[in-house]
Image 1 (cartoon, rainbow, N blue to C red):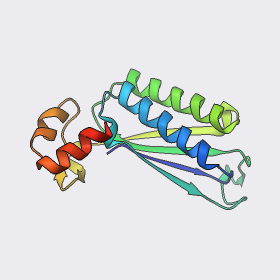
Image 2: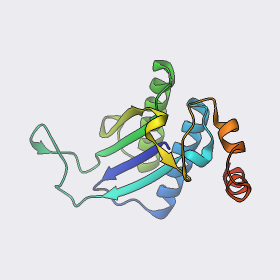
Image 3: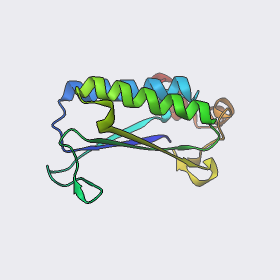
Length: 144
């Protein structure tokens, strides 16, 4: 479920994308204590001059990371996620911390359907996984 949408006008190389995907996936797995197989990362490239802040063009290095995650994480968990994503994404793309904006939005698990079923509450992933068809369960375990 956690869906991380990364929007920027910067050119991001395939290697940088792979590093960001691994970084975000690891951060979410550790800090939100969620299975890696839930994490989705989507890149959106906009044309230069298509991002604005306060009515003025944003820095050409501006990167916006929007995350929709299941509700239930503590303020401390989210603060660690926000900070790590900002720092690691900035380092990978060689941009300043001020150019990486990260938003986390909480969505109740009951409002999300993936893999053909409503997602579990945080901490109930193992029971949820056990209830899935065996082929899907094995596929997800291999992604973990």
